[in-house]
Length: 480
Ligand SMILES: [Zn+2]
Image (cartoon, rainbow, N blue to C red):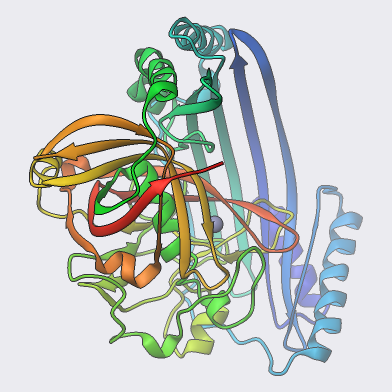
C-alpha cells in the first residue's frame, strides 16, 4: 500500500501538480441484524481503492479508482489533474495551504478483542436472545444489530509525509417498537439509529450488555403506550448524553465548521450563523459551557493520530467559559483564516470521496456535580432520554428536537414517565440556559454518523458529554 501511495504521488508530480496527496484505503465490514428472532441482515465484505487529490494551477482536483493496475492509477491521476485545471479557471484565488510538518509514522487504534475473530455463532446468539427478550416484554418489532469496520489506510503527500493508520470500530444496538392505544412507541439502547459505534473491539459489545438491557428496552416501549403525553410547560430540562450528543452535533459541531463559515460548502442544512469575527468575544453559552474538539481522546470511532490530509491531530477549544474561541479547520481554511496550522479536522468517508472538514470529537467538557446531585437539586423539571427526531435550520440557529421518553422530576426525584416529549430553542439562548453539567463519572462518548457534501458522505462522528441541565425551557408533546 505504501509503494502504491508513493507511486501515485510521483505520477501526479510528473503531470504538473504543485501539491498531491494519495490515500490508499482497505475497508473490512460486517453488519448483522436480527428482527423478531430471525436473521434480517448478514453481510460482510471488504473493498480497497485509491483517492488522489491534486493542486494544479491553483485549483483542486480529485479522482478515485478501485482498479489498482498501473494504467488505471495513471488514468485516475490524469482525471484529477484535468479536474483541477478546469476548476482553476473559475476560482477567484489560488488554493493555499497552512504549513504542516512532514510525518513518517504508523499508528494502530488500540483494540483488546478483534471483533472479526469472534465467531458468527456467538454474535447471532447474542442478537437472537436479545430480540427474544424484547418480544417477551410485548414489543411488536424487536431488532438487535451489530456492526464492525476496520480501515487500513496509507496517506502519502508530495511534501514527503507517509502515514499508515489502522482504525477498528465496533457498534451494536437494540430497537423495540410497541404498538397500541392508537400510536406506536420506540425505545432503543444505547442509541437510536447509529448503533453507538466506538473505536474499540468486541470488548465494547461486552461492556454494553445488550442481553441484560433487552427486557428493560422492550418493557419501556410498551409502558410508553400508556404513559401520558409530555405536558406543555416551561421548566428545567436535564438532557441525557444520548440526546445531548446529537444536540452538540447539530447546534455546535456543524456551526463551527470553517468550510461552511467561509462558504466553501453548504449542502444539507449547511451554512452557519457564526462568523470568524465573532471569535474571542461572542457569548455562545453560559460560563458553565466548555466545548472542544479532540480526536486524540481514546476509544471513539474517530480517534485518530492524523487526519486525511496528514495533519497531526490535537485539541482545539471551541467555546471556553461560554465564549466562542475556535473553529474546526482544514489546511486550506486555516490558511484563509490566517491560522498558523490546521486543526486536523479533514476526513473522507472512504477512498472514493474527497476529504471535508468533519467535526472531530466535538464534546462538552464535564462539570463538577454528580448525576445524582444534578437530579436531586432540580425542584421541578424533566429528564429527556434518547433522541427520536431532530430539525434545525440552515444557519444552525432554530431547532426542535424530540426524545423517546421524558421522566418528570418533582422535588428532586424522578417520578413519572411521559411520552413524545419535544423541545425547541435558538442555539445561543439554549446553551446560555445551561447551569449545571454532571461530572466526569457520568461523561460518555456516543458514536454517530453524519451526512455532508455532494456527492454525499456518510461520515463518522462522535461526541462526548454527560447529563446537563438547561433552565426555563419550553417543552411539550409531539402532536402527530
Ligand atoms: Zn451532521
